[in-house]
Structure formats: structure tokens, C-alpha cells
Length: 74
Image (cartoon, rainbow, N blue to C red):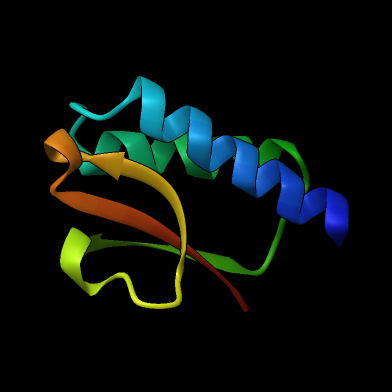
């Protein structure tokens, strides 16, 4: 579980740095493909406004940093 959370965290940092200007759906699809390739199952990725993140795990930023892609297990 610790390895998985580390992988998600690193993925989030890489996604934020590399894809700040990407359209959200494109970035979401890339993150989804990477998670599936690592064998992760039973999760959701949602696009939310930057101001409504709260306690969620951010795995990417898109549309110039105005929106975030958040990860939730389950």
C-alpha cells in the first residue's frame, strides 16, 4: 500500500509539472492508462475546480492549473 501511494504521489508530481496546459480529459486518460498498467484497480479519477479540492489526492493539474484531477480508491 505504501508503494502504491508513493507511485500515485510521484505520478501526481510528474503530471503537474509536465501537463499544466493539457486538456483535462487527455491528461485524465493518460493517468488512467498509467494506473491500469501498474495493475491498480477499483479507483476513480475526477476533474474538479482547483478551489474545491479539500482532502482529496491530487494526481494532476490541467487547463493551465485551473482544474485538478483527483484520485479516490473504491
